[in-house]
Image 1: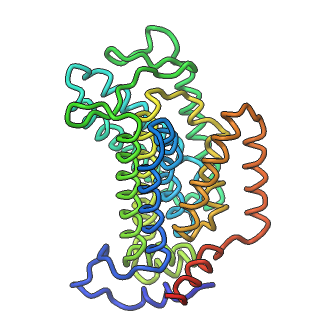
Image 2 (image 1 turned 120 degrees about the horizontal axis):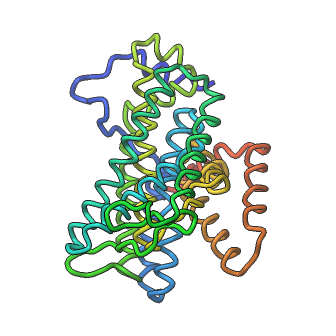
Length: 347
């Protein structure tokens, strides 16, 4: 067991430092920053259609980063990230679809409303989850049940009686004609949409880095290693878990909002059983504790899944499931850290 975070917790935090104060960067952080620069350059040399497709590849990164922080760093496995993803997407569609007379306001209000909805659900559900002292092994089951209940409910909302204002929920057919992101009088499609998604993803990554490279991140690691001992050091374990759960929910909501702005639709299948397992696969294959590994695996597996699905191949989920099994059986912790260490030595 890694006792370094626990030892750090035994020391008082200087007032000038602050609990969320940025402390240090790792080599992998510089590598991820370099990766984002390469992605930005790549977006400038491809066609508008390819840029739109590339936007889909990267929009799921915030959700994966949130799960990496929650599961890999804090030790809380959740199958509920797609619930926050779907709730944020549906909320954006409802709000933006009812303010079509002012597309700029619709975009802003939809984003704020979508993220707020994900946060409220996380706070309410997480409060009962963590303050109720639910056992760690039960958390994945409970979060999966929450996801499936939400997906089942949204699937029953077919018919004209199921609408909010002017927006039909659509049942299993989904909500369609969701307004795109509107900036400075322009609807974002193609390359502009790609750079908008990339900018949001980079901001989400920076938020994750700030959280993990601070004293808050040290507490999360200590929670994973020994929650009882962390509590004995005077830290409110339940509050820290709720905060981490809420931040991960917001990041999943970011991906949900980006998804509906990209595709202009959302269906209950986005919160189904198969979709609920995907973030777990991305994070497990990436090594869970490494942001570099999670980013690379999320991008690579989204490209793989999209290419297989678009070519009519029905084995996309079989392949992803096999990767999950391999990631669980063969230790994947540290592969990206070793890559970062190689670059660090060369530097």
